[in-house]
Length: 361
Image 1 (tube, one colour):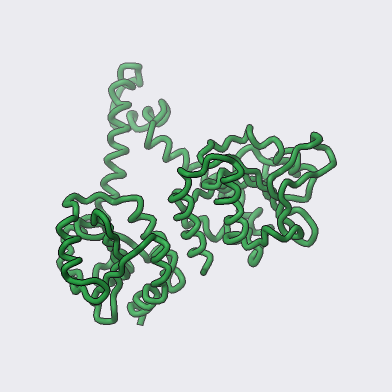
Image 2 (cartoon, rainbow, N blue to C red):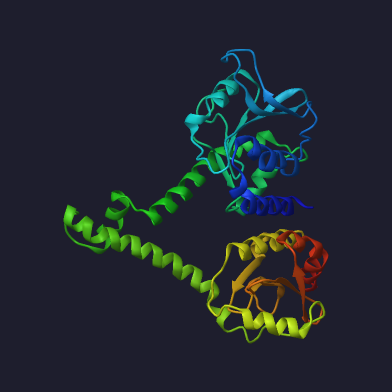
């Protein structure tokens, strides 16, 4: 699989299994080792590449270990410290990383709970790990703009100089994005004052703050909803979509599934996971930004260039029991394929790629 496909596959695994992981050891086995092997490309069973329970004798407390050290040419390049799945990642929990960072050649330290990965370096002071990560990669909500930076840490494309040179910009952009997200969710006084001063004349008193705090919060939520709705407006008028269905299931089965459908539009996590898998597959043909989705009452459509005349696939996940992947031939006739699990989507990778290529001719 391509890098983006492997990333999407691990994301689906993390999202599907995180509730069943109860210990740190289980987190390592289920999520962190697959991350090291399938995403970064290192052999977790080769001690020349990956050293579990890594110990450095110089300048650290006796008996303390870092969960994994990734080696290149006999030198430590990346240190990884693991916490239990679902546990909050706090820099206070990374004392071993701090100490080992200063006594090894490592320039990259990683703190992870198997779902989120916080990457640190030494931007603020040489050989001293920064207090804040320069990159936060979350398999629960993948930011595709970070994939090229993550790829620079893989065995195949390892480019430490490029990572370090971009770390400063990544660090501040990431912090700004997280700050914006926090302010949209729960605005603080400065944020409220900023917007209030542009629509209200007079002093920013306690009474004014109490009046405008819920208004700023409501306006932020409505703005985000408006942006989402702009992308979904045409989903209700999908009459231009091709509706021909054939082949993989009988007409009686289709009819019964249609009777079982919910009549409200509700995008589910499972639909978004399926979308990420299809998108990862299609990215071998076009840039990720060109793969879009629209949800409707009947199905979840995945489109090229957000154009309903360029359908790549449809996810028919609204049935009570069965789920289907709809794929298209050259005449845009849809065939539904029964899915036993989301991973079955990968069985149709070539058909998905062929659909995308058909729109590029």
